[in-house]
Structures are given as C-alpha cells and as structure tokens.
Length: 141
Length: 424
Image (cartoon, rainbow over all chains, first blue to last red; front, side):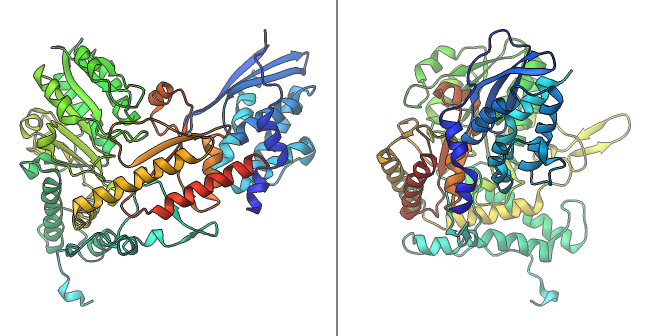
C-alpha cells in the first residue's frame, strides 16, 4: 500500500474533500474547459488579471480526487503570479507528472510536489494534468 | 513436432463431461494465474475483454506455426489449409448463431466495424430523408455514432427509446415511437453498463409489424446467453470475438441472406470483386462482398476455437453459475455502506455498475488495482446513459465464466480499503 499513500497524500485528499477556489467567477477575463473524453471528467477554469498578474483563479467541474486536488492546488499556486511564471509552473508540473527531470525546479511551488507520485501511475497522468491543460488554453493569446 | 506432417486442422476442445468444475475451468485460463501488485489477480473486466482459454491460444499458435497463409487466392497447400480453416470458422459461427447459412456470416474487425458496415451499406442504399432509426438510452457509442453519421448523410431521423427507473426499456414508448416511417430499430441485447437484458423477440415482433428491421448489438450477450438469431427475430446480429474468450481484431456480422444480397459493398478492395477494369467493377456475392482485403484469418480461427470451448461447457451450467454469481455480487455490494448499485432490471447478465459515495470511480479503480482487482471505471462509452442515470461515471464489475464467489468477496473487501485510503 506504500505507493498508494504516495499517490493519495494527505494534501491531495484534503484538497479533494475541500477544494479551494471552487466557485463560478463573475466577469472573468479568461475561461477555458478541461475535458477528458476517455473518462468524461470535465472542469471549467476562470481567470482574472491585474495587468500581467493573475489576480484570481477559480474552477468547477466533475473529476476524481487527483484532478480535483490538482485544480485546487493549481488555482491556489498561480494566484498572484505573472503569466510567464504560470507557464513555467505548467511546464514544470507536466514534467514532474510524466516523470521527466525538471528543467527548472525553482518554477514549481513545494506543495505541488504532492503530485510526484502520479508519474508511477500512467493511467492517472491525464487526471492530474486536466486543470493545467485548461490553464494552457486560458493563457493562449 | 514432425514438421513434415503438419496437421491442417486444429482439434476442437474435447467435450467436457459431467458438471461445470470452476477450478478446472480456471486452469484453462493462464492469465488468471498471476500476481498483480503483489495480490492474486481478481479479473472483473471481462465485459471489456475476456481472458483467453488455452484452447484459443493453442489454435492461434497452431495456425500461425503451421498453416499460416492468405486465403482464397492461393493454389499452394498452406493457402488451401488456411482457406479451409477460415471457411470452417464461418460454418462454426453459423452454428453458434443458429443462422440458416454460413454465407450470412461476415467476419469484420469487431462489433464497431460491423455496425458501421450496416450503417454505411444498408443505410446509404435504403435510408431516405425523414426515415426513422430507433435507438435506446442503453446504447454504447458504437451503436449511436455510426447512425448519426448516416443520418447526416441521408437526412434520416434518430429517435430514442427511453428506459424506466429500473433500467429496463420503456416498451410503451416503443409502441409510440414505432411508425410506418421507422426503418430500423438498432438496440443492444445486453446493456454494457446495467446488464439489462432486452426482450429482443418482443421488440422485433413489434418492429416487424410496421415493416422495420432490427439490428441487435450482441457484444455483451453472446458471451453469456445462448444465441439463436432466428428465434430472436434479429435481421442483423453483431458481436465481437474478444469478449467471447476469442482474439481481438475479429467480430461477426450476421445478416439475413435476402438483406445482405441487396446491400451494396461498403469498402472496396481485393477479395470482394467479380471483375475489375478501370471503367467499372462487379462484386462478389456475400459474404466476400463485405470482406475486402485480407480478412482476420488467424483471429476467426481463434474465435471458432473459443466457440468450441464455450460450448464444451453445458449451457445450463454456465448460465446458472453466472446468474448465481451476479446475484451474489448484487447482494454483497448492496451491503457495503456508501455503495449504490445502478439499475434493477428485470433480467441482468454479465455486469453490475455502482458508485461509491464521495469517491470518484477513478480513485476506486486505482485503489482496487493496488489490491490486484481489475474493474472498469468511467462512462463505459455510454455517455447518454450516464446522463440519464445522472452520474458522470461508474465503477463496473463484469464477469466471465471463470469468476468465483471469492472474486466478489475480494471486491467487497477492496471497497473497504477504498474507504480507508480516501478518508485517511
């Protein structure tokens, strides 16, 4: 059971039970859908900017513990960051969950390392990446 | 083995005498005997694909080792052997289905390919704007999307027979929906999510009364129920080899001869022609007209071996074993706190779907896998049914003839661990 607790860490279980930023945003500057057609999991991500800064981020949707906690921790992590910082975080997260060496470890807040165990579960990589995929689309010019 | 005396015919499994011996049966399936994540494998995903008995593995290996050649066009010995075995597989399938003629059996790549064949061949020829196709809320995407494609091409209209709260078809709605405009009722024999067994004969009689044809998706029924296409009243009956303990890559389209004779080819290529020139081509009679290119030769031979294997077990024993196991699973799952079994159909075979309170099916699936338990999670390619049941996805346990009471017990214990992990 050891790598199960590696996957379902307390931080992930906590953010699954009580997801942060789980709300519809009034008048967002950007929004994007995350949808995984193979499992039907779906979320909507909303962003509000203050100049180049991400002033607010929120989400709602249906998904497993991994995707929900990932969206919760992602929205918490990108708030107050610039677009380019968010993009760097996105790249770092993607590398971590697919088991690639991080090109720039500094880009990833420590709490996101809770998802490092996902790399051992190839079938769950898409779950962890769902919110981040939506973020990528929301940040597109 | 003496390479000079390669036998051309793969021997059928010897008939099993006496009662159904589960432990003996399990020894026929080598994949069942392994540890997964440190636990003995509990395989509850036969509805997605069944494990293969040695008889099938040996038929495939035997063919590929000794007899492999392309069919139909070769004059050499191996091609004659391959052709003979392939033709025997067609005849074996005719017998499995209770069809009148072997030529009514077309080998396809699978259930999906077979439904698309009917949609594209029969549909293009016989559907006109305003013609109606009836589907049901229980359908798999493979019996929805091909009809949408042909609807968009022909201007036909799709209507849907709803289910009731138990997960059975609402037959009163069927009567309201059937009309002189109905050309086809395309429905599953057994739901891949709820396990509902649809009363095909009853529906076929009503459909035929208004002049409509009936296509039956038998992917989930053929492994569990004796099939007699004529007794069912099916104009088309379709199933996959790999869910029937046979290989992937082969499926079967049964169609009544007079229907197939009037259907144009769908895919063109070798093997399906009469004469070919750059001006025009003529086409072979059925079944070859619908088998363009090299067919799934080894796979069809493996499928025939699977049918021999399956029918070596007395049907009554098989049915009563699977029925009592499914009843046991329903009862045990209902006892687990937080588990909700979906549907309560009048007759259920093969699968049971459920949800677990506060836990997404994916998480259930991952935690069960860590205990060696294989279930399927997600929408099961039945998104309209998920919508109807008002769940984003489910956990599905599906059974094969080799499953036992201990597998259900392991699942129930495993669900206890799910709760433990998720509430840590």
